[in-house]
Length: 140
Image (cartoon, rainbow, N blue to C red; front, side, top):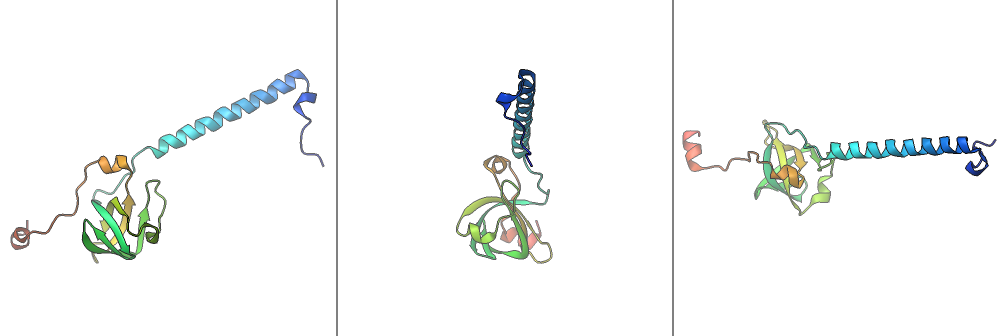
C-alpha cells in the first residue's frame, strides 16, 4: 500500500503550487500558534489575595525557611514554578527563591508555593508580619 503521494516534481504546475500554498498556510498557522503561546506565558498569574510574599529556602523537605524563619511544608504541599508546573521540593534544596505562599490557617503549615519570575517578583505584595512585643501585648 502506497500512502505517499507522487513526488512534487512529477505533478503538473498547478498541483505543485497548490501543495506549496497549503504548506505555506500550515507554516503561517504554526507561527501564529507559537506567538499566541508566547503571549500566554508572558501574562502574570492570578495569585490569591491572601498569598504572602517571602524568600523560601528548602533545608531538607519538609523543613524550609521563609525569610530566615523555620517553617514546614504541609504533607500535600504544591510548589509551582514560573510556568505553573509542579516542582518537587527536593530539587530546590539550598536555593533561596522569591515566592508567594499560602499557610494553612489551622496548622500553620505551608500548603501552596509559587516560584516567581523576575516580573512577578517586582510587583509589591504583603509579606508575613514580623512579630513584635508591642503587637503581642496590644493586638495590633
